[in-house]
Length: 184
Image (cartoon, rainbow, N blue to C red; front, side, top):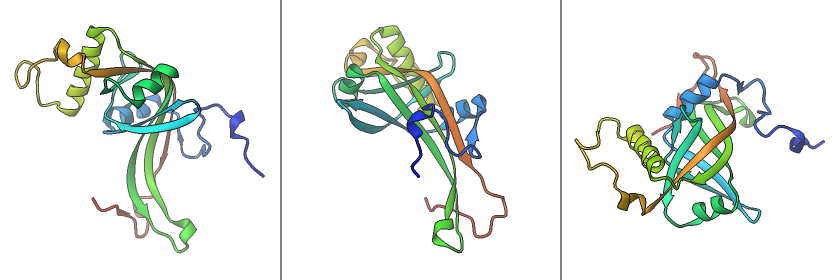
C-alpha cells in the first residue's frame, strides 16, 4: 500500500527514529557543512545545484551567490520557494545480506523563500559572511581588497529566509563489526 506523503508536513522526517529535533544540532550542521544543494523549480521542472553557502543565525537565513544571470536567478525570480539540503557521511556499515548494508550520516533540510538581495549593504554583508566561512584566516583590508560595488554588480547574492528545517542522522555503535570510513 503506497504512503500518502502529500498529507505530511513538508519538514517531517519519515523515519522518526532518525529525526533530530534539536535546533542547535541543525544549526551547527548548517554552520559546518561545506556545500549545500539548492532545489528550485520553474514551470514544474525541478532543478538542483550545489552551492557554497553560509548560515546566518542572527537573521535565520542562508546566504549564497551565483552568476548575475542564469538558471538559479531565473528560477528564484519566478518562484521564491526553495529547499536546501546538506549532509555529512559517516562510516560504511557492512552486513551479511545486501539489503542490510548501510551508512552513518547526518543531514539537514531547510525550507524557505529565496530572494535576490538588492540592497548593496546587505549583499556585501552576505558575501563577507561567505568569505569569513571559507577563508577564516584571511581578513579584508589586510589579506585582500574588501568587496567593492563593481564586484557586487557582477554577482547575484541570495538570502533564503528559513521557514522550517529538519534534521536526520544515523549513528551505529562504535564497535559495529566491519565499519569503516569511505576512502577519500
